[in-house]
Length: 304
Image (cartoon, rainbow, N blue to C red; front, side):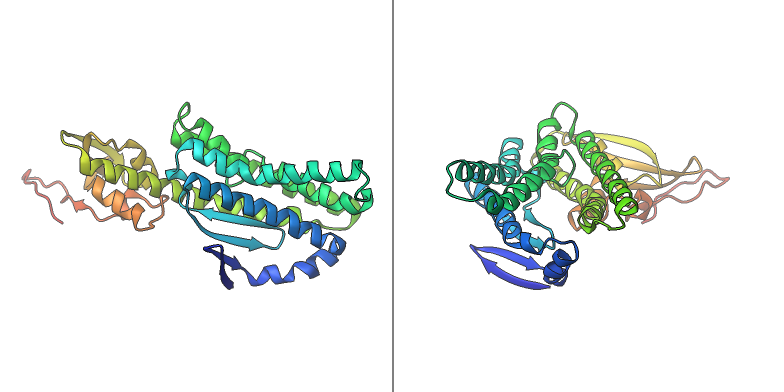
């Protein structure tokens, strides 16, 4: 992994990205490398500039073999309007280059053959990133627009489901093209793998952002009632997170085979997520107040 800083931002270049010229030659795209570099640079630079104007921090930009990824501060903590603006800045930059290529060609300043590659790559990059699937730019914008009417958790699940559906389509297209032509499109396969691998990261980022917001709200809440909710011990942490409310002190009574086994409070859940714990972990795996098994004498107690 190669790391360097530019414009106050950390850039990461995986060693796999150094194989881009070889992959491009294998796919017959060596002549398109300059156009690809221009399209990707404009796309990521637009994200960076829009983030700066919106007051959003860009933690790092990762350069991939056939794409790039601007890793901003947790996107699920950014106000919807700013998230839409930053997400759509990249495709907007590609659109500007598309219009510029068409204008220069129309005015006779650039030959059509010379502008064709830049036009096509910008169009492909723009349309792909506008697809409504997380973590693509279109998916970010869709989440920002739907988080209020649908709720944050439903909007997140929709975006992840769409990313999996898109990955399945890309793999199917790559297989069909490979069978028909005998050549496998590695770009489609890499894009599908990227989408499939991003789902857990998106869930974890959303859960961590919600936990941080709840933690801040709980510190400022003055009047809170106590609520005890019974859940199976195998319930995912993310499901319990969705049940937490700032105005309530929430405990979860964990059951195993319908028998009470432990108590978990909201602080254990929030600490788990804020510290980077997986939202797919079960409540039974967290630190809890263990309840002793029922005895014939009816004695009860709580053990930590």
